[in-house]
Length: 363
Image (spheres, rainbow, N blue to C red):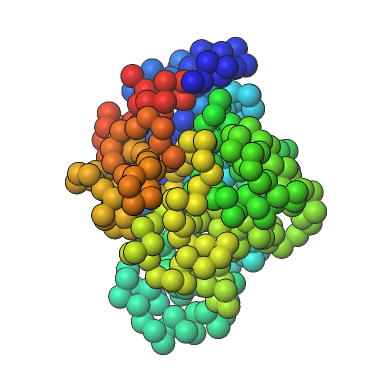
């Protein structure tokens, strides 16, 4: 099925890695465990696609380490030739130039995060303190945003992400054969927002989708001078007035029977029905771990979940219309392949990578 991509660019091995939100040594350990490194670099015959979200991991006690090591990881990946390492943007990556663009320096961010910590209290929110925090920082939706979600930021990270965007190194999508690699998935309605809109049949072609998404990003970056990068209508940053971020970098698949109606409003959305994904394309995404998938889609799951393995979601015809099935492994004709295995939370040897040629776990 992917024969045309087997030797693309002269590479013999084509691999995708899920959200590398983990200590640098662990990320490199995963790559080494799978035989992808030669010394401190990727082997020359290996092409690696990072699905995005290189920042923000660990508890508060690891923030300093996470802040510096995430930047070091992204710089290490970017130091490889652009045809060898494809960097996809996740919501955490672009938050550096969106929600976090309002912080002029590290000291301003640290002061805001201290206030967020005092209000969030590791999930036991002090409503009075949060209200005061949001009056001072209305460009974030909640105290939790800085205390947990975007808790490991530095201006140096923003400068790195900005440089990668302006050099067209950080992408929204990548096609490998008929696989479409994107951070969180794109629906038919998302594609209709592009100019010109992608409608059938181009919306069923991975290469056409990837090209259109990347052209959209490049146009927005070219028009961007200062302040937050505007990615509407595909993606909306979160703030006090708008609420949490929504769109192609933030949304998650859900069984609509288990979703709040407001989360499905859009696009852009917080949640999407996977039956809205374009047919004929298998999307490879990160962004969401197994436990969250099972919470959002409990009736479509086949077995207990765990971090580490690859997962897939299939949509098959049935007497009642369509049947959705989610579970471990890479099912044939899957509509979605999930590769965020919760790297921080599992042993190195348990973290699976996706072989893009075999469409299976890398052996």
